[in-house]
Amino acid sequence: MKHHSSNHLQLFVLFYLFTFLPFHLIFAQDAIKTTLTNGPGRGQEGAAMVCDGQLSTKWCIDSPQQMPYTIVLDAGQATTVCEYGLVTGDDTRAYPERNPMTWRLSGSNDMQDWTMLDDQKNNRQMPDEDLQEYRFKPAHKGQYRYFRFEFFRMRSGTRIQLSEINLYNTVQTPVKATFVSGSGSNNKEGAAMVTDGRLFTKWCIDAPGQMPYTVVLDAGQPTPITEYRLFTADDTHTYPDRNPVTWRMSGSNDKQNWTALDEQKNNHLLRDENEQEYRFKPAAKGSFRYYRFEFIRMTAGTRLQLSEIKLYK
Ligand SMILES: [Ca+2]
Image 1 (cartoon, rainbow, N blue to C red):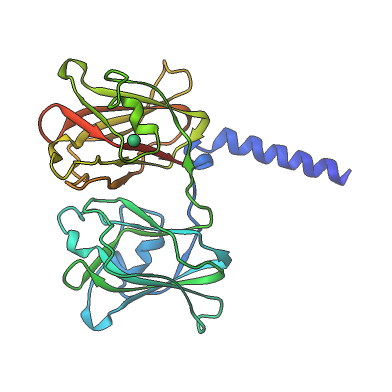
Image 2 (image 1 turned 120 degrees about the horizontal axis):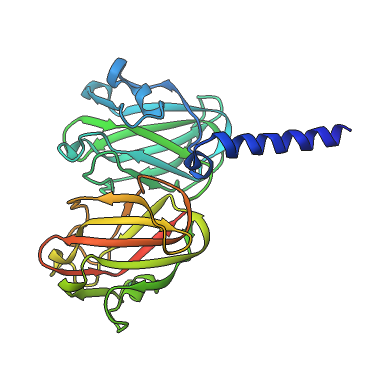
């Protein structure tokens, strides 16, 4: 009897989840819920803004005597953090110098003995972009309830800003995607080169009549994508004009009905560097088997090149 009712309860919970929760909440890789234990700054741009779950609020402080800026987050119970994400502020494009560059992450269960989990020095990976999450894998793991971030240096100056600090107990994993179709001929610089797993092969096309340049990838089965990454090519330093700046991403399960998931307009995040990865989070989520990228504009001219497109769940 008891066994039966617990089964019924499980079914009811599943029914409730699938009926009333928005699609993306079921499939999104959710961050661990944290609360602020301590951190500098109060009020509207205080430290608590990094864990309120809202991108529209941020922690922003310029108080040199309080450096390193130290934030302690409480995960509520001992938890293993496999990845953490720092999310840029709403005006980081205008103020990229506020991005942290040198910081340390430690874990503790009593707020007294701290174990160092990650030590980043002069890390310039945080993008000059508004509201972008950049993920880092701590060098060490362990079960801790409290997580302390100490920010020592910003790109320049003494003001820091972050809209969120996300802790994750699951790792973002690559999705093995295969090539379905794409613009251009099937030669050694065809669209299929973006899924061969090699940075030294690339999709390179200059065929204005075929624009927007399209590539469709197959994830094998319906898969929610939390991030996609574009990789520049082997000579992007010489030809930065071939980087895409405007593109769309959509998902489908039948290759006929497409759902728009992301749209980037005039985004100059890709730099003039060879074989570098750039990360993007789709604005919308859903579970799709096929993913389509349409490249609408490049930095200049009509030639596009990319060495890889990778999907992560
Ligand atoms: Ca390749």
